[in-house]
Length: 554
Image 1 (cartoon, rainbow, N blue to C red):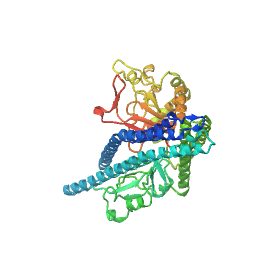
Image 2 (cartoon, rainbow, N blue to C red):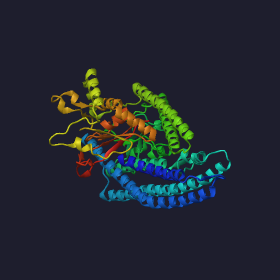
Image 3 (spheres, rainbow, N blue to C red):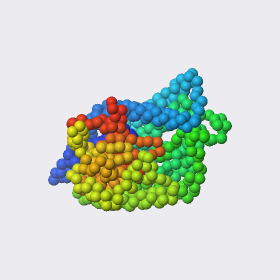
Image 4 (cartoon, helix red, strand yellow):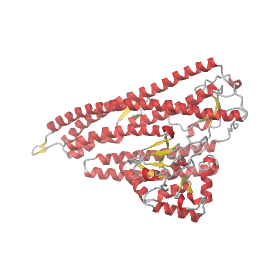
């Protein structure tokens, strides 16, 4: 979801600001060198004075922002639960059309369920925001400690007489810049930055809020069984649960005696590791006689091993990206020119390492798809994306790709007398690390200069596979990716085309497919996009929609 992504980036921005302010002070308040050497007492006094200003300013700046961010987290969790409940009810109503006869609890029982679930929802929100609050306080304290440690560390290195001022500061700040402001320690001793912890906590809480919303609606209709979905290349740790039906005693109020006790409890599976933090698995409503019967042979041992290998490749690529980011940060803040050059070279080496594992990950995915373990290309909206792709001949597709790469900007539609959206979108404020693509769209296609073709011409609309080929070959996109690597940014494509981010049950929309093909995150509207002349926009009538985020697979 876009809100989850925006919150994660907000915490990352805060951490970068704290480091940037600290290193700027070291650069600007350089020690004064005299004939007798450096005047360290004066330098130390200046730095400690700057530290006090740094501490006071950060407390004032971020206290209010942390409160606002935590409020947004609470709103996001409640919105997620409400959306999940709505989607779940649609599935139940479809099951009723197919012959399912629900046994709904009494009104008094439903009221009791509502009160209980409301308390549980409040507990989830409060627990998440309280934990974030402690981490937010800790990162400010950790930044102050890191600054103070670097001040005394730089003086110690200089007193040895074997380093210049720049080299001493680089050595004193290396550990902090390498690891970031690690302010959260897990029970196993692992330490994490505010951004890492916030991303994990928000994603996990958002998943639980979604499951809570689905469970609340299941309780209303007297349903307690769920099935663990077959995934598109998820973790091997949870492979044993794929295709199993459970009584949901965690979110839907199921009891061990439901269905004669023939299904295991979801709580037992969760104790065994299902739905762990950052888990990619999900569950779906299961109704006997209506839903597809479970298939316990979906993932035999060999398939589980293949999924584990896919996960390993994904983890290595992610590790390489973290190391690349670390070395780019060290290069950015190094004061000594030789250190700056050394870290830049290491960053490029890690970029090559990441690219190698990304490529291997893609090959493993393709292998798994070919063997039938996973399905990553045919789950499109009614098969429309694949159908659009297959309609074009090789020469037609080549012509479209060539034209798309030749136009000045990635804008693939025209204004009309009634609709000036394409011109208005050129005024949309640019965001660092975001590449904008504009057109008119649907959940499975976008327009491609439609007015230039006869009515009904198959070249007037293109699929995500074709658009990805266009984007990858564009000079401005290659420059954009190169700049993101240099600055250590996570690139994101913002697809400003109506409904291209609209998700449906069990299928992939245009933006999700584009994210998979490009290997970067893609943001797209899940409803109609409305644009003002100044470029500002909103999604859905009365702002009822949102910009959905679809993350890259590795």
